[in-house]
Image (cartoon, rainbow, N blue to C red; front, side):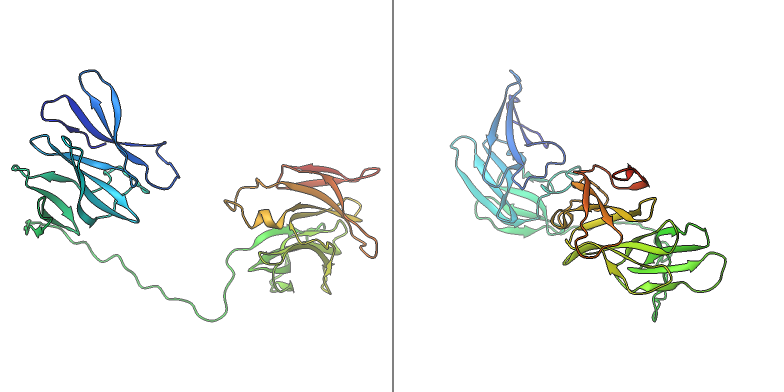
Length: 331
């Protein structure tokens, strides 16, 4: 990027990037290379600690100005191509774009004056003259006639609601087996509402309830809880309301509770609480997950049973009864 051709036409100096377009490594990512236009051979030329960008050659071919990162800021340096002397010209200048998109170059352009005694550069939103000998910076004033049509103001006033929060989106709605009620969660609460009624939904659980599901007879609701600090658990309670009962003891990331066909146990996905808190993205189900079976009766001595380790799925679809364990359909 930004090739500069030597006065004799033999060499081209240019900035080149390490890695690919979206390299995620920290800077420096750019160096300045030199190509012999006669032989086509390339060689690294400038590889300072802060990288090297934006090569600019003097008219006499003796000096090469370039940008580099020093700490967290960007500066300009000057390399004498005859002696190898390298010194600072200006620091700091406008920050370079090594971490972002460099489609419009890495830095505003700078060029040598015809007598090679100064650089003309864009810095701080203006144009300036940088004296190479003493380092003095002189602003270059300029005016530009501009005719720019101004459209109507697109800002609109929006009233910010106050008072009780209105729920506009519900989560994980589940229809009861008889088709007369729907269970869902909203803002962390668990609700049940009749389908053919204008009655408001009834809140059964106040907070941290997710993904409800019905027992085959419609008398029991299961759901999962989860917080980043305490982990999650599998819960059940009467669909008509009552005291919730926790079925799991080990804090984990539980999802997709599903009753077995006989209603005597539940299947649920279980992943590590530690892994859940460190996922790269919320929508990727790429963590190791177990399918476990939990007896509905609970009580002393009741234990969960792992059916598959790990399960590469994020939904439990059906659970048919079997002689020793439910047959699970997952995806």
